[in-house]
Length: 121
Image (cartoon, rainbow, N blue to C red; front, side, top):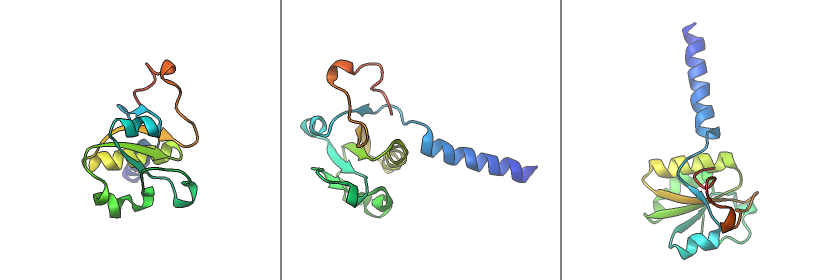
């Protein structure tokens, strides 16, 4: 009984970290974030990045090389929502202020559509 409860608790913790959306970040294009002076951190795999103008550091390498990212506001580019959730939570834990994101699979809408839905993933 106790083992089942511990197992369910561990599974729910892992599922929360991976799939529950991170709040208080806004969807924004890379160029808009650059104009606001944010550091661009692309956490996609090296072979998926074609035209990023920021710091390319795949999620798998964040634990080793996060100290190379300048402190301050950060804009994260990720391949999908799971990678984004994991990357943003890790960067926030290390003291970075993640203000915006962009998903490679789905581009952000124009400014006219922003509003209620720009608070999180």
